[in-house]
Image (cartoon, rainbow, N blue to C red; front, side, top):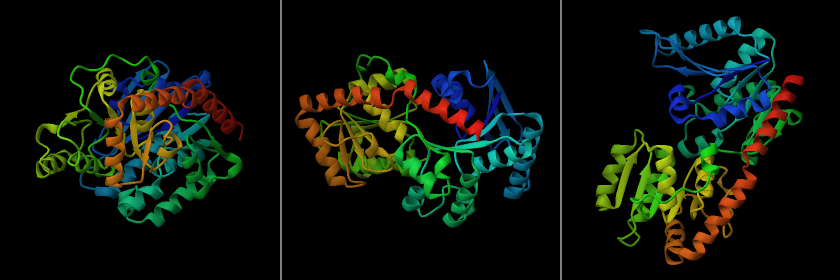
Length: 374
């Protein structure tokens, strides 16, 4: 059997990060003889291909000079038609119920195979935070919701790795008898023994894209209200760098904040291990990775964060964008580091159980087999 999987991560990220654990999740127990992963590159006019064992990667180049969005959409349809004719998958899967889900639905109907959808983002939340649909070119959350309903209602299976994402699927058309509540896991490197602290670690650490929806602004404003000896490192890169650097200057933070750019995983883990506290704002993966570090974690009560951070037990859960409460939580950790570290160790122990890779693999295998049967 063969799996065709539409995903939104770039080919480059898989090659650089070596996401072997994630590939295992796509083919748990060797259900498929091969897996073909496909993502979309709207900036290139040619396809890029790569093979790694039983996994093939293709980035579809959809740029058509001089034709704008219409040209890209036509190129998208042509590429999907070509894929459908070349592939004979036992299952087509998509990493969202929007553009990728529509691709899975189109190809599955062409080849007569079932399709499934993984819910990994809450488009309702995106609209609430930005006033825009996650698919910006649609310009309408209502239109985007209709697309999601079309995709989810026809899917042979809908997988939610958290209760929040599972409920999102049900709200937007997934049939209850074909919806599956699984579990979450992250890259296997975060389950390994905690490394020695990095010698250049700072008191506060944040990892994530430099993007407005990561709310790094809030951390900077909070830091400006804390003692001068408390400093922050931010690991990540993005289009928001210049604005954040300017904000640091306006707040008078000077050398108290370092934007480190992209940090290799082993160095990242060492810097996490050396920090007094880690802050997580948005993104389930980042929250789970922080909790697995064994360090004290402060997180916004946003998206699915509350499913993983138990306030007063495994971390500090702060009302969304409440700067005063954010400062209070971080100050509590600084004042009582021994108690905070106990909470951090307890969080790591619980996350290793609740977000266990083997449990997630079992969930995924059951889900895949049920999709094929349906």
